[in-house]
Length: 441
Image (cartoon, rainbow, N blue to C red; front, top):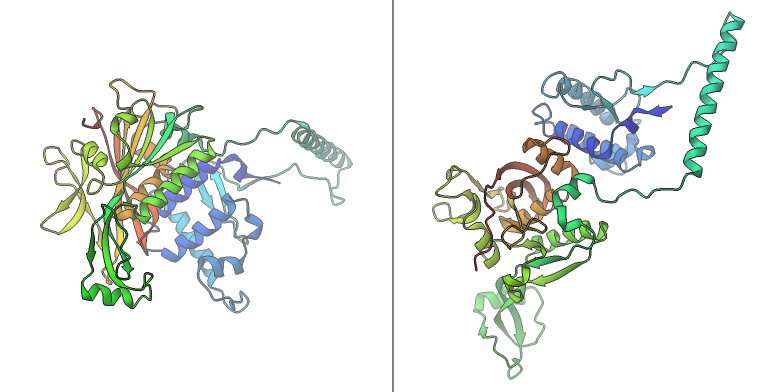
């Protein structure tokens, strides 16, 4: 049988999944969302044969390794609940979705079906059986089955003998949004902002290295805390020293995601620290900037006249993504949401896209990734590298099919934070800019 899944592209499957997971119908059904995400991602990865009641229980629902489907019906009951939720979603808020997800009874492998298609699988013409009463009917059905087999064999032979065309490892929608950054022969600079920070190191008397970097004896309480870590690497007194060579962990993860996309497209990339680059050196080049205004002069220069920027809110004593004081978004504010243990549980990232630095330069692109905490920056980059997320952004912008993207725009992205790592980046809002922010001289 030919699966109806084959009529739906991977990008459309991911979009169909995200529409369900973000819906109000599934809003308070975390276990059902984990169930559905797991089986759909396994299907997308070509691992549908590995989907089983046991694998769902262990990997999706968090059951212990001793879990036995024979004595625990939790997976079967969740599957029934998922089917009911899907039916409710497509009967209400998802009625106009182009593709639908179905979980056929007796199976845990999802099907992705066009909205108007009633059956999850296409059936081959009926094959004759000895129970047919009419000899003529047997001959006709036999002939139909024979013709079908012949056609299938011809298609199979064509696929085997035809030269293989390797699939593009980069999604078309990702190429659309990255534009000149992924064009053949493009010159891409990945510019990393470095935050000013203090390093701790212990030095025995008389062994402090000479140089221009100032060293300060660490306070007693800092020395006591550091000693408890068993890291007295120098065997002496603890000192602190200034540095501009430190990047944030979330910024590093953002850089890794960018390099992954560029490498998949076969594009070389040059990685440079911001403090070692003059802005004039960025003219006539495609640039990915990673950093936020509180430690990146480039980011501060770009965002000072943009609709959204990252600012410090003195009343709340936190950093926020907020609108310009002079613009219509002046009352809009996105701030870090902390959990009970005073750790960030939800953060936000900011994507700013504009043409090259020179006036009228549409052949190059500059994209700035910033965020509240490094997790926000990581979420911004992962959102901009995700085909599913970019399909949603394209819909939010009202652009259909091959419609042209705006030259300059900003996108605010939300994400969950677990141990400072960004999870599930999602669209929050966007603004299209009539004029590119640019870098001030």
